Length: 349
Image 1 (cartoon, one colour):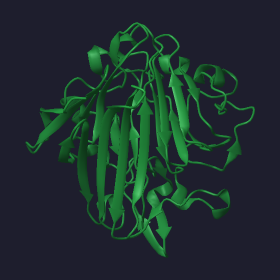
Image 2: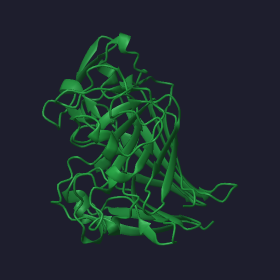
Image 3: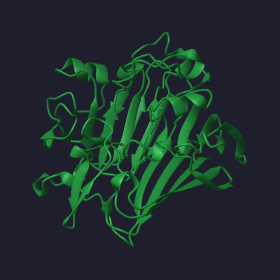
Image 4: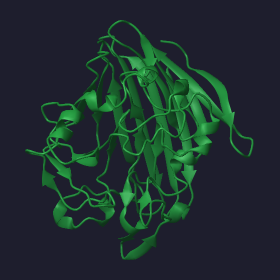
């Protein structure tokens, strides 16, 4: 284990510095930046020992400001979509700012991914950042105090493990669903030019017998069984083969978790990631809106299906769901704490 290294990665429009912190464990390196409390890079070896960055993003800071892609970011107050940008809580109507037509997506037009978080501290192989979201931020009620904790260590078996813990406390009832929005390209970002659509060729295993069908606005319309649909990943399958089995152009859907272990493997490179989480839903998104128009790392402009997002969260639009759908309650109340945990381990190929 080594102590983290920090550096200035860029500057906000007001001149304040954006800090990037490097964490290492074994052959794995993670870089986290204060802008968006984001995972900026993640270097993993393949079965031949070739180390590559496996998350989408940019090599320098300016494009993060210029293009909102949610690369590696901490998303909040509420991940995913809130229908009509509104909800009623304890008899009070709340109207939010919208940023996807009539919908509020990932916290609104100025979500947590657009903020430069405060660096609260660094310890051995860990970093903690904080953010205060004031009353009325994007229309949400109450003040919310949030921390993002990243730690990279080897477990007792010598397997590198990246843990991401997001916590929030507020002074008024408010829906809260924090997540990390990393785009995983286990093939390696540097190989995407020669392996397009590689996200569809990774093997994904998710313990979920139900999923949330969506309408044209990507809002849930109910709860359905995954059986005999492209949404059944219980035994592990490639998104490509799943899509071929049904009329589906890509994934942007929530799977209702029955267990906490999710696995993603790239069969070509052998890179493997095992995720454990405490949240009830997993949004599977295959980068459907990446269009090759914005250059990313190594000069490659990510395209549709170049990477996959696995976003643990409360069910989308849960604050507005009918009670008989059985959605877990996303409302955080004063005196309680909301916590999102992602435990990512990287077994040797």
